[in-house]
Image (cartoon, rainbow, N blue to C red):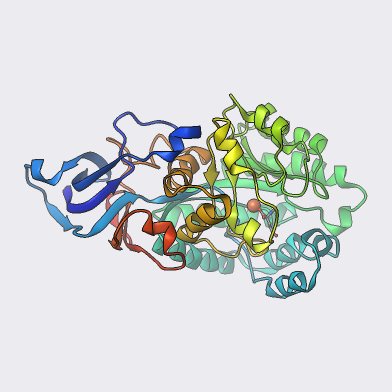
Length: 411
Ligand code: NIG
Ligand code: FE
């Protein structure tokens, strides 16, 4: 079936020579077409151009007068399968407790783990599906989802099975990450390496054997897992073909970025503590530096040096980190605004960071993340808006009117 979207005020992020990711100064540019049309055959983009030049017929015509069309957001870092909420700890933080203090008391990640262990698979699925709808309503078309609130072999596998069901039942593109090493269960305090053994000997083989994970993640940071722990787990993951995407340098200059690059991670994420040595190490690597403005905002943390990264020629991806502890929101439009306000990214840089670069960070930039011939037709039609700069500018307002996934309207 041929669809034409016509009278598009401005078509964003078109690529005739698709790039896997966009780096450095290139991030400040996005290709646009004014007064455009876009042709979609079934689930694929076919062509585009200026309205005056359009000739041909279509089975379906969509009038986008006054509206922008752009690729759907890709959200390459979430923990959006979880049970309950943590607003009481949020209030404790306002009163002055730190994230690390809350974690040490058995709160934080361990609090969510207890609730996930108690929750049924069905409940976890139902809650996550509602969140996924909400994310789609704000323009997200692809989501990476981590386990990590299980802490036991059974609960981790339960989370991964929920992700598999979401993948089967949602039209969104979903990738699953095994985050067995997210926190240290209380009963393993003081003998952390034995918990690492459990991840290596049971979680990784079982998740891999059931085909439940695409990637492996470790929270490699001060107060959590060490570089040595991380190396052991990434090596075990590699034996099962699981490429790393790791949490690094949120709490300290932990060596997480270096270990990510050494193990050819697809991404390393958070990066609030990133110095010149870390930037140097990322140069020339295939690892996508990924920054999570929602978590930095919510925890009121120091900011990752995004401008220095881009000045050094690095690509940057920006994701939501949707989770109950440090970023209870999966609205990528809000994340786009935060990227501009917090990191002084230009709207063009932030758009590249939330589409093509996050697509790279979840291993799908050959199929998604820009409007290119042959790529899957995952796109947003905005409400009538004056400019694309209005997208991050009007923060908190939902500018998405329609979302198409593989050519089919979902929102
Ligand atoms: O990405 N930093 C580690 N993990 C999550 C937080 C998880 C939680 O607090 O529940 C994050 O921010
Ligand atoms: Fe995270």
